[in-house]
Every structure is written in structure tokens, then in C-alpha cells.
Image (cartoon, rainbow, N blue to C red; front, side):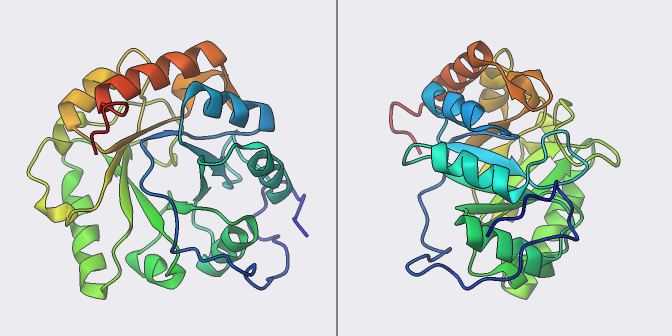
Length: 252
């Protein structure tokens, strides 16, 4: 049973056994273009039709793009095969995150709050994307976080670099400090970099050319209103992202 309580972190469905045959560590290869903040099956279908290979489902109550488990299940059921499902969580207890991820059979868990490296270890073997803000001088914090993860022996499956936005947790439309990411990346230890933060059809090509990420992620950049995706913007963004990431050319 899926909870239809609207985005309350303290209210989750009772823990259930993992579905037979579901192995959260055996998932598709790294996505390239993620459309985050999907709130309806129709918008999920629009993202897939535009060519995105991942969608984000936001379970953070403070977001205008928050969905319940029941809403997320309806969106997931409407998606074509091959589109990765990413659950976005902010400061939710790892046990609750794991319960939701397993019930919905999410492909990725994105931690977008103040979660410590220990949360990644608690969520193993599920694949975790750790979102961290990247502002002027902010890379030191990111490097320190990864060093802590390495010391624990529990690295995230990917890093999502977002814009620094004070007390906000993503989805603000602010642009990340791209110049901070144009550095030798030994500190990433080979982990894929997902670039987010204010990406639009107009700037995604420049962002990719500057930062050279493996993947890109947008929410507000393809919306007519918060939580409402706009088909022409989706198509333009995906087209520009594919060209700059050289997706059709098979470049990893």
C-alpha cells in the first residue's frame, strides 16, 4: 500500500519486504539527462517523449514539486521502459528513505539535504546520488565530504553539483558556479558528475562545454510554473543537452 498523505516526512507507509527479484544495486547505467520535479504522469511522459532518460520524484515537503508515494507510483507506472526513476529526499531518516525506495523500486536515491556521509552507508546497497551546493569557494566543502565518505568506505554512486542557495534545497533556478568545477577531479575518485543548478535550453550547451559533466539535471528550466513542465522547453533542453553531451554519438 502506498501512502497518499501529502509529503509529510513523519508519515510513511509501514515497512514492507523488498519485492521478490528487486535488487537495488543492479540498476541501469548512468543516465545522461534528468528532468527533476515531475509531479504528474503526463509530465513524466512528456519528459520521456522529449528524450530524457531519467526523471526525478521529489519527496521533500518544502518543495512545490513534492509528490506523495501514491502520486509517484502513478508517474512510475506511466513511464516507458528505460527511463530511470530517481527519488529526491531532504533530511529524511535513511530507514524511511529505504522503505520508500524499495516500495517504489527506485533506480537511484538522491540525497539533497544536510545528510552526512554515514547516511550513504546506511542506504547501501542502494545507489545514492549525493547533491551538494557549489558556490564561490564551495568546492572545499565538497572535497571534505568525499574524503569523509572514502574514510568510511562508502562512496556515493554519483555527485550532483547544484547551485548554492542559502537555506533552500534545490529547484531555485540559480546557476551553479561552473568555474569551481573546472579543476582536476581526482577528488571525485572516478564518480560521475551530474551538473544541475539553473540549467535551461539556452545555457546547457555552455555549461557542458565549461564543466564537462557526465550528466545534466534541470527542473525549473523546463517549466511554465513550479511543478508544471512545458513541452517546447523540454524538447529544446533535451536536444541541446544531447548535442553537447554527444549522447547520440555514444560518447560516455
